[in-house]
Length: 305
Ligand code: PGA
Image 1 (cartoon, rainbow, N blue to C red):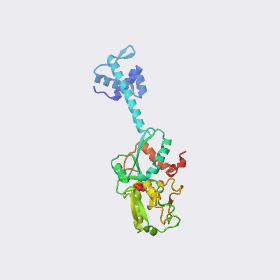
Image 2: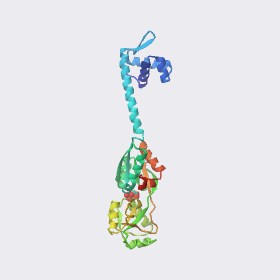
Image 3: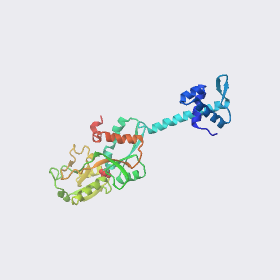
Image 4: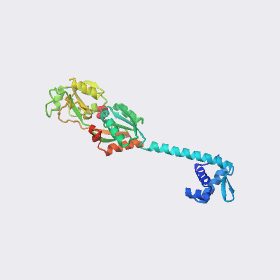
C-alpha cells in the first residue's frame, strides 16, 4: 500500500473534524487539495474510507483502521521529534571532553562552572597524553580537546582561551630560591626533573632552551606533574611545570617559583576540534561558555561558591 505521511495527516484531520472544510482550515490547505489527498489515499487502499450519510461524513470500517494507524503514526512522529529535540538541546546533552594531563588540574572546575549554568548536562572527561589526544581528534572519538598548541600541520581548529605560564619550581632550601633575575646560564649546572618527551610542557621547555642555546641536564622523566612536584620537594632537582599544577605547595612553603630571566614561558590553552566538525549543541555551548567567560576566573577555587 503506497501512501504518504502527508495523506495520513490530512486524512486524520478530516476524520477528527468530520469535515473536509474544517480539516482544510486546520491545515491551511484548499478544500480541493484535501479532497485530492483523501482520494489518493482511498485509491492506495482500494476501498472508500469515508461515507456520506445526509450531510455528515463517517468513517467506513477501512477508514476506522486507517484512522487508528494514522493516530499511532502521529504519536510515533511526535515522540521522535521530542527525542531529536532532546538530542539537539544543550540542557540534556552529553559532552565528551578530552584534556591534556596538565589540564586535569582545572578541567573539572570548568565543567563544574558549566554545569551550574546548564544543570541537565552530563560529561565524560578523559585525561590523557598529547599523542592520544591527537589520535582521538583524528578518529572523531571526542567532541572537544583542551591542550597546548597542536601541531600546525594537522587539520585542526584550535582556539586559545586561557594563558598557561610555565614556571621553574624548587624546594625553598635551594641555593637559587632567594635570588632575583637568575641568568639562564646558571641553570646549566642544575639537574631537572622533566615531563615525558611527548608532553606539551616538555616540548615547550626544550624549544625555549634550544632557542637560547642553553643545554639542560634532565636527570629524570615523569609522566605526572604531581610526581614532578614531589620529586622537586624531595630535592631530586628543579622542575618546570604549568602554574596551573601548583595547588597549596606555594602557600604551604613546600615549593617556590624561581625568578629566572625569560620566565615564565608564556603558553596558552587551546580548545581544539577537527576542522569542519559540527559540534553537538552541548559541546558548542561549552565552547561558547569558555570563550564568553573569563576562564581563568572560572578556575579559581573562590569562584566555586
Ligand atoms: P602536557 O600539557 O604538558 O600535560 O602535555 C599540555 C601542554 O602544555 O601542551
